[in-house]
Length: 598
Image 1 (cartoon, rainbow, N blue to C red):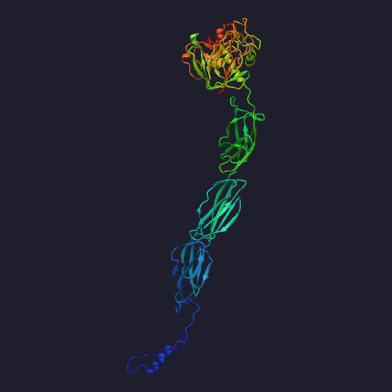
Image 2 (tube, rainbow, N blue to C red; image 1 turned 135 degrees about the vertical axis):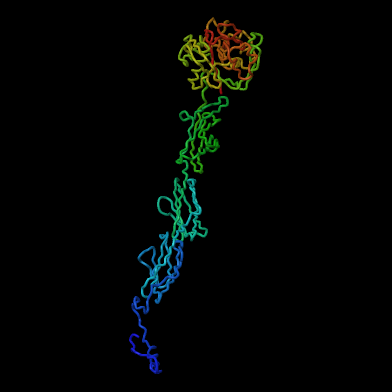
């Protein structure tokens, strides 16, 4: 043995030789049992093999498979290693193949990955023995997942009233933790406010924008891992109407009547509403109040129309008005003021009103020409105006621009055809801004010069001047009288009322020199025949409509009424009829016009 006494013993066979005596044997046993102190080896790599050292071996590891981990959660990693003829001095932990490592004395290590560490991470661990020898690596992977908070209920875009204060609730959740804080803000940057989460994970915030318009809002929630979720929505604070005004049919400072009930003394005016609203998509509703004083204004109209007709207004009257407008969200504004109605419109020049609506009279006469019978009832649905005199030369010239017959302005216009009279009616309607009644296809000649029209039709709904129907003429002549003449049956009174052959001196006379009838109509009997609107039919009285008869639909001659300076007193009777083809003219024929109140 290294370091002992070397003893050489020779052992021989046979005889006594070769036997070891007991003392010697005992000595040998003792000498071999003592080898001295064990040597301490400082070099583990000594090749003599007396006390060899080996690298440690990892025998267990946890986790033993790829593992998922939420961020900010810690994971306890455990490793167990064993050394051959050596003890484990510590462990080295490597992450994502980095050269640097974390050293631990024991085979446990707790590690957490933060919000920026999402993804898969490689973990390598090695054991180190007392001689500094390193084991083969143990490996596994950790996948760090971001369990971010989520919106539980999204806040929708909303349009609200300009003056509203809007409350909105924010609600978020987290599948791997808890919501700790809510944030919200409006405008361009930053957060206006925040609140710690409550048990229900919902908070409520209020928003307002008194000036109206778009308010973008953003809000978010943060969980206990520091993760954040963001959402946005828009509040549109409706901008209410900022002005409203009333416009009316007017003439100067007064409200002009678009129509006037001359019988009852009431008129109608047109009122239009104009509102200004910054939000063009808004729908406006108007309320229009009207009264004779500020204390008696009553609701006249409510709705979305921008124009209404105010009715039953008296002329020359001051009315107080108030106009309110509001949009779909109830935002509103209003205006008020006064309007003065115009005076009653003057009657048409030189005309008198016949209160004929609803009136019936007995038309025709018996015992004379068969075309004037039978006597029959006729009624009217409208009032109408009629000229107090036959149309004069002066009136014809002023309206048409040409003269006809005698140049004396006070003389009735004569020597004109039925077509000349129709053209005068149209020209007078145009002058007075009324609808023209007579339509035609072509014309030859000038008005007052025996003109001729083709394709003449009458527009029954046109509110303009026209020739009287035969029924209108006879009613205006006799009114409710059943006598032969409008003044009675006495021929001796005729010279006071009419120019006929018996007293005219064979000449036409200026208008209005004789007494008028009870309506104030002059020369309705005598002086000149008067064109009527109707075609002539001797049998028409047998089929005349009860209400508003307009005469036959067609014919070759137009009706004449009233007699003339050249004809006998018989033709001045209220019921006498005559006729003439419409293109003819004579110095005994003139006309007067009517204007029906529609």
